[in-house]
Image 1 (tube, rainbow, N blue to C red):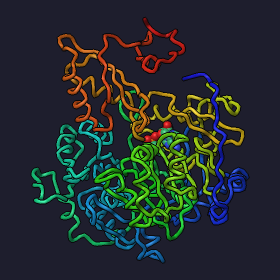
Image 2 (image 1 turned 90 degrees about the vertical axis):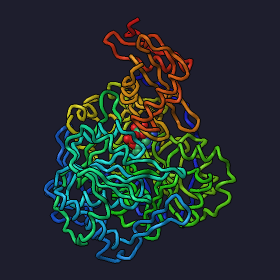
Image 3 (image 1 turned 45 degrees about the vertical axis):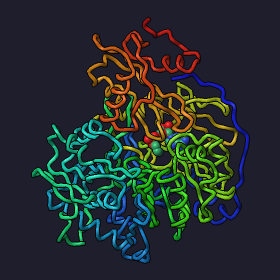
Image 4 (image 1 turned 180 degrees about the horizontal axis):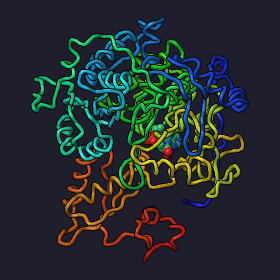
Length: 630
Ligand code: PRX
């Protein structure tokens, strides 16, 4: 962990048109934050009261460091709030989901009523296959409506879902299936990406070998001719739904029952299965969707993430649906068949709220203004960003070229572990390029030194959260010790693992990770997982990876590799190793550079000092190297 350090702060401020603040559901930050501080529990109870519960809570919060329970005693089902609540009322025929496939003209729409019925049919199918409350279901699918149906059907019957991003390879999927002890894997034959088929089912075939918990694999068959299903284990998605009644009473869940597990990278060992629960997560994602995005009844809301990441869980599925929004999803990538694809979609569907990642914005900057310039983007109202720091250059471009200097830029800082937005500049408030903003009402953050003392403005330190919040993770699946570390590193605070600095107005600039997590194109990678993938190759004795700055992806993976005796370094071997990582973990984890070395810097206790490698790579001072072995 670094000492505190000075940071030169940008001074520019943009002020959105006053109508944004006048029309916002949250109102101004000072008043809303004050309302929260005056009565924190009353604040959250007020939000929770906007949703429907089968039984109300006895207490809003119970906190016994480091364990929180929210809305204790309450009973609910999140899908009741995402579906039944709307399907029974004025939103029955409102479009809940718009899907756009890769090929022009492939699109599907579902009203709340239709989505509700489909979810109930699939929920009945899962039940018939023996899945019940508390069982784990792994979802490994492309971004199609059936994925959303599968997710909600699990929640409907109280099964815990574990979604694995379709870009992950067989080894990564295998680890996650085993750790979660998934009983069912739901997949598709293929995903479509850049005009090619991604053979998801083939990856599942390999991933379920030696995963004895898996009883069935449900396959959505998209390609023609239909993929043949072979083993006893395999069943067709549409067939299992056939004849299922579109009525399935929601399982009555306790507020603290688990809703899902989602794996995120750790700095050591296997990925961490972050556990979120039903009640608090529902309240947190509903609140931020409605009040931070300031969702209005007629918004067409598009979050470009994938449900395989927390952004997709919270801001494609649960939050916006709980708030009754029209949600657009698409299987397209930004630059296929051409770099105008996403802007064409904005124009075609009249998207009003657009939520993406800085890496995408930087990619668009490289393609040039002419691409968005070809389309009418006037429907856009709010532009969101998430996943890594939105650097001032990207902010300026997003603001002027996409938002025509009229849309607020909503840079949201949060994590898989936090479940919901934590820091953002509320719609209508002054915006400062480079700064995510202030903690949203409901959240208490600070920037501190290693001892936990707050540091003054302009001095960088560690970002911590000082009070529990409803949608916080409850544990790390099967490893509570790892959960406790978040709350025990700095006394009584949640340590986010990020470095940050605050300005005089309390705006927070997030600078990046303070640990060995690498963020490539907004995807969180643990050095440990990439290193083990390298070491699993017969030629590799030892490996260390670091993140190197990359103009588009934010960071790129560079690997240092020590070869086993008998193996010769060379270009061919480099390509083999890159391919090996790609097959195991998927394209996102592929090193962009490999260097063969004969030793790695280590501490006396044998830990690789990636910080030293990184400093050397970037021609910087490695800092304190007193613990270096050699
Ligand atoms: O380093 C921060 C960065 O992404 C990390 C969390 O990654 P993950 O759990 O995968 O969740 C990503 C989507 C919420 C954080 O610790 N990060 C996320 N959003 C921002 C950010 N860094 C700076 N600014 C952001 N807006």
